[in-house]
Structure formats: C-alpha cells, structure tokens
Image (cartoon, rainbow, N blue to C red):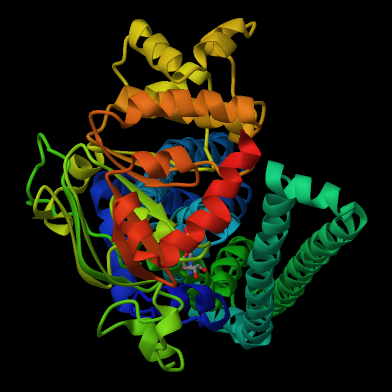
Length: 626
Ligand code: ADP
C-alpha cells in the first residue's frame, strides 16, 4: 500500500486501501505504543480482573437458586444479594481506573503521531505545499490521527477484552455443562455470516464517510478563506458554491443515516440470534432438569446469563480482522505522510555559517519544477510511475545559469515574465534545490551548509506578504524574537510604516486580520521590509513591486528599500529603472536562460535584449510613474 513514499502514491492510497494487516505496519504501530508499555499493562490487568469478576455473577445466581432458596438459608441469601451488588460495583470501579490509563495511552499516541507528522510536514519542500490541498493535510492531522487513536483505544482494547471474556466464559460454561455449551455454540453459524457481512458494509460506509468528509472540508477550506471568498463574490458564484457544498453535505448526511441504520440492523440480528440461543438453552435445559436429577434450575439460569457474554464477544470477534484493518488504515495514512521523502534535506553535520561576507554564485545551475520535467537526474520514483515524457527545452525553468554577485553588490534580475527570475530567488534560500549545478554562498555549496545557518543570513521580501493572524508586534518579532521595543520602532521607522502603525488605536498591538488584509498591499510590503530590517541579513532578496502600487506608496517603499539594500548583497527582481541603473550587475533572463549580464552601459552597448527592454519597458514604465 505504500508507494515507496512517492508523493503521488499518497493521493491514490485512498482508493487502493485494502483490509490487509501487514506485520510491518503492526510493528510500527507497536513502536508508537511501546513508550506506554506500563500503562498498557495496567489496562490489560484491569480488563482481565473485570472479566473475571463479572464472570462470577451468574455463579452467584446459580447458588442463590440451587442452594440458598431451596435450603431457606437466609444468611447465604443476604450474602449472595450483597455479592450481586458488590460485583458490578467493583467491576465498575476497576473499569474507571482502567479507563484513565487507556485514555492516557490513546491521547499520548495521538500526541506523538501528530507531532511527528507536523514536524515532518514543516520540513517538506515548498513544492509539496504548492501541490497539496491544505484541507487534505489538515484532515490527516485531525481525522486520521484521531482514527489511529481509535484503533488503539477502541479496536485493540475491544479485541483483548473480547478474547479474555470469551475464554473465561467458555471455560466456566463448559465446566457447568458441556452439552449445553455445545448447543449454545451451535447457533453461532447463524449469525457469524451476517455479522461479517454487516461489518464489511459498515467498513465501506466508514471509508466513504472519511472521503466525503474530506471533500466537504476541502470545499469549506477553499471558499471560506479571504482569497476564496473574494473570488466567489467577484464572480457571483455564491449560489453555485452553496449548491456544491450542499451536495457534499448531503452525501455526508446520507452516509450518516445509512451507517446508523446498518448499525441498528446489526443489533437486531444479534438480539434475534441470542434469543434463539437463549430459548434453546431454556428448552433443552428444561428437558435436562426434568430428566436428569443432578441438573438444577439454577444451572439453566446461570447458563442463560452467560450467553450474552458468549455471543457478544464472538460476534465482535467475527469482525475483528476487518475492523482492525479498517482502523489501521488511519495509521497507514499517517505513516504514509511521515514517510514522504524530504526533498530538501538539511546537512545536520554541515558547515555552520556564523558570519558571511555575502558572495553569491550560481555555477551551471539548471532547474526544472519537478512535476513538469525531471525532478532528479535519476532514480526519481514519479518519473518511473508516470509516463516518461521527453524533456524538451521548455521544461527547464532555468538552464545553465552562471553568475557571481560580490559582497555588498546589487544585482538586478530583469527579463520578461516567466523568464525564471523568481525561480532564481527561490534557489538561494533552498526553497528548491537545483536539478543540476551548484549555488554557493561565500564559496560554500549551500547544500553542505546547515540550513538554519544559511537562512539566518538571507532576508526575502516578496510581492505577496504573508502576515500571521496576530499583533503587528508578534509578526515583526518573528524575524527577531528578542528585538527590543526600540529596535522594532526603529525598523518600522526605517520602513516608513511607523507613523501609520502608531496612529492606529491599538498601535503595535493591532491584530492583523487573516492574511493581513486590513493593510493595503504597499503597507504590507513595508511591514515585510521592517521585518527584514529587524532580521538584518547579509543577503537580501527582493521582488520589487510591479504596477499594483500607487506612486505615493511606491515612493515610501523605495525610501524604505534604499537604505536596506546598502551594506548587503542584494538580488532584486527589478522593475524600476532607478534600481536597474544603480545595479552593479544586471542579469538579463529570457526563457530560463541568462542571456546577458553586465552593467547598464555594457548592456546598452551590446544592443541585445536588455537594450530592447530598456527602450520598450523600463523607460516607459518610469515615465508613466513620474
Ligand atoms: P518570472 O519570475 O521571471 O516571471 P518564474 O521564475 O516565476 O518567472 O517562472 C519560470 C517558469 O517556471 C515559468 O514558465 C513558470 O510557469 C514556471 N513555474 C513557476 N513556478 C512553478 C511551479 N511551482 N511549478 C511548475 N512550474 C512553475
């Protein structure tokens, strides 16, 4: 069921899941349960003791009917009545005691699994997040982890309880009368097949429920966030979305009803068969009492009292395999994600970049987005799974890029849209790794450097600024948790956003709405700039805003950026003429290739793409803005 950890395998697993129980899977589940070994032992002890105590109940009834009543032994009668109260009471108390341990085990396993999964997801590459529905991820973190817990605290504990109860009951029953035991067992074939069938139906329903719930969550996720809601409103799609949602919700409703009805039917069948068994025991038992002097009324009653303890566990056990397999599907789904290979692997023993000068080099770097072309040169599982497509030039987002930006220099990336400028900026903080070639910082291959020590020196300001749903201060502190108030204000002043923030009623404590929507695009970008100023990295990567900003906003941003770019190596996706003109090196990109590089004058003299862009775009853009 595991597709060698391939990401596409994860998408398909839902459809392919079969009720098989692999020992590898069980061993892995056990690895998670092992730390709770002591508590599990308590739970098992509790189950065993309760089973034994409960099993004594019918024996008391037998003694009451066979001995105490005929012999008119009042003392014995009182004692037995007391026992009839004390036994369930003790059983109940032990059960409560046992529950707290089983709850701790279950919740503990949830906690461990969830944290392991979250940690793993945190380390997944950017590509993973661009190709995964967040609803799907959240569903795994929530539903499947809870499903996994149920497998432990529900199915596994039920299994043990039933096995113990059954063993104890059969032993006692056979001791009472083996002929009646056989008779009681004779009705079993009557209900094992329906129990199995219904179990299977229930399993199918619960699997469909998982799927429809996930689909419903996805609709909610997509349409109930700011961007989604905006899109729905702008295109007037409320009615369609309402219908789409109501279809999904209706599917959830239908399945809920079906599962409840099938469940009921199951109990009716069990009840019916138990009734047949009970009738048979009383009937044949009656004969036995009449014809065999040693057989007494109390024996029949005690026997009948044992029947539910025989049929219940047996019918449950008939389904155990299916149930266990179903509950283990959740574990499997969680493990599947934990096993997803990390595309960007940290070098834990790698170099720690304490200080950097800020020299950035690209050496023959080629890059293809993994789902468009070759992910890695060889051995890529997806390439094996999917049809092998010829690699055409167009599939390379970057092809054989080489350049050097010296410490403190400003490099301007220019070129038509889709040329690969953004992709270049992604390779530097290792949001992606090059397919071929090497990216170096201060002469070190960045794959040999500890990731955190690399990231610490790189600051990025993208066009789309993400702010957490938290105060402005908390958002700023993200860059430097120990920043003082003075530092925060200093950074915001430098980013030309302090006046605006301090004019807000709550100042720096203002909560930024989901995705920071209360600020305009330009204001958000200035907050992002303040954040980078606080971080104070040696290397700055900047995506200059294009046309979306008004000139006032743009002027403020420019004023914020100019000092920021000083004293650092800056790589800027440049749209403004002033940035381009002040660049130490201009990198001209086209169709994933670095077609020209040099200073403005050199490139104008070369009279190539840059010169064309200069005449047609940069100049015109700047005129339009000024
Ligand atoms: P630019 O920043 O110069 O506009 P990009 O670096 O964003 O260009 O894009 C370069 C090429 O890579 C484009 O053809 C784009 O369609 C493609 N591309 C960008 N992001 C992805 C992605 N996540 N998956 C697949 N292809 C992508």
